Amino acid sequence: MAAPPLDDVRVPTRYTLAAMWTSTMFCYVYADYFELYVPGKLSGMLAGRIAPLGPVTQGVLLGTSIMLMVPSLMIVLSIVLGSRACRVLNIGVGALYTLIQLLVISKSGWAFYIAMGALEAVLTALIVWTAWRWPRRAVA
Image (cartoon, rainbow, N blue to C red):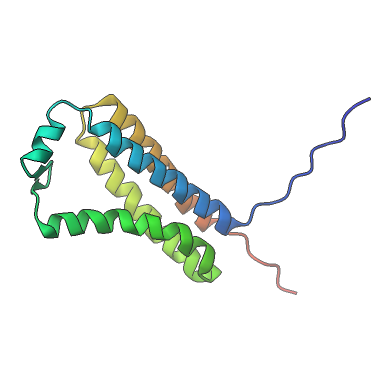
């Protein structure tokens, strides 16, 4: 006797977007963590340099912190914002971070960083695509 088909429900678009931002953030964190094993990375950090940004300053650290705050906030904003604002923000931020990631990996020579960056770019591009294709309610 055959097993009955599995029951499956449609996941709301906003939850899909939040999950993709979460996956993206995990990739960011792990890529940065593994980068610490690149020869010379830690000595540069101890000398107060952030490649390719140069000397560590409060402004540089604030800027890089904001770069990671935005996708972190996109997780919760994808759930709590209204659908129109959520869609527009995910398209805009997702496109921006896709471009940023493509620029970052174009400057890297390490295979792991290129692979992680490519995955991050794919995830943020999928965020744009998912938000762009947000289902519309039928007008009665």
